[in-house]
Amino acid sequence: MPYTYIVQCADDTLYTGWTVDLEKRMIAHNKGIGAKYTSSRIPVVLVYWEQQESQSTAQKREASIKKLTRSQKLTLIREFTNEVT
Image (cartoon, rainbow, N blue to C red; front, side, top):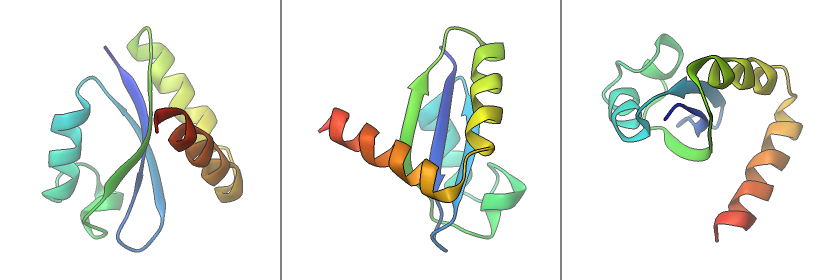
């Protein structure tokens, strides 16, 4: 199943992406090969994810999250954290 996710980078920035395997993607990010943006900002921590119905849906959701302000992304993460715990 595809996922849309947000990671928090070592420099406290947020990176949004999509994948079909969260575990493998986080390993790749933390090896510096997940994305150009995160490669110089490791380690990264997974702080948010949503399971999607299709790759297309995951990519569309990624695009919509990337349009959010940092404050809006932090609110999304905070609400998600409250749901998970």
